[in-house]
Image (cartoon, rainbow, N blue to C red; front, top):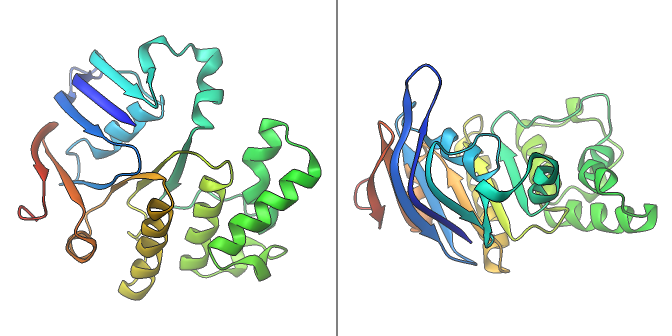
Length: 224
């Protein structure tokens, strides 16, 4: 699903955010990406989603060479990748339904199909009864679940999350991580960037650890 071969990212300032990164994430695999603040986690996710481009090396996502994805094709590529953010990035002047529907509206789906998919996604995250609510009326955990529903409504084969439990207490963090695990169990590949060592130990998934832009660990949870 993801294959990085000697990938580096240097910014115009001369800062090397990632240095010679090589790893692969198989289809239907779930893994955690961890490391200190500034280690390169967010940069790596930005490369996967083509928010940024590698400086060197080869990056493949879902059998697509990212260097060959033209700017015009980037929006179509991103339909194959669901993204969940720590700060939710919801539209607070739109209902829950409209927030989740947005990727489908952009993709040009028919109204009936949009309704069916949005309600299926909301049902999956336990928010079907909140479709007419506005995000500002929801708890932090509920807002994050809206973000997850929006990320999966296009049925992407790959789901990425950047610190999805950073603003939540332990109980809500468990609920959110269990949702990611459930999506993984039905065949979605999942990569989660997180500082949450408790969740990493709880779920016992593969760990990719970055330090100052370098991959220092790829395997079990022993290093955390």
